[in-house]
Image (cartoon, rainbow, N blue to C red; front, side, top):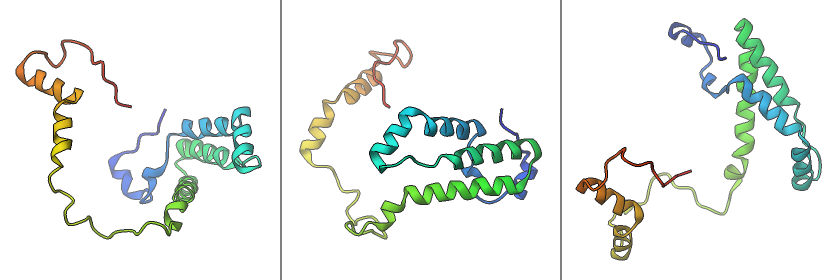
Length: 149
C-alpha cells in the first residue's frame, strides 16, 4: 500500500523524491541481502560479507514517512538512494579508457549498409509486419510467440 500524495503537496516534497521506491522493495532488498545465497555471493565477489543495514534503515524510514509524513525520513531515503546510484556509476565516472563525447557523431543518422538492409528484410519481425500490413494476420487473432525480455 503506497501513500497517495495530493498534487498540491508535491511542491512541498524534495526535488528528488521520485528516487524513493515503494517501502516493500526496501524490505525485499534487505531480505535478499541477508539471505544465505547472497552472503555466499558477497563472500565470493568481495571476499567478505556486505553490510545490509542500510536497506533496513531505508525500510524503517519509508514506513515512518508513510505513517507520519515525516520529511526527515524522506530526505534520509533520498540521500541513501543518491549514494547507491553514485556507487553504481562510480566505474563509469572513473573510466579513463573511453573518450566521452559532448555530442553525437556527425554521421549518426546515415543510411545503413546495403547488406544490413537485405538481412533486415528477411527478419522474423519484418516478415510478421508484412503479413500484418497485408491482412494475412490480425493484431489479436493469435497470441504472440515472440517475447522480448
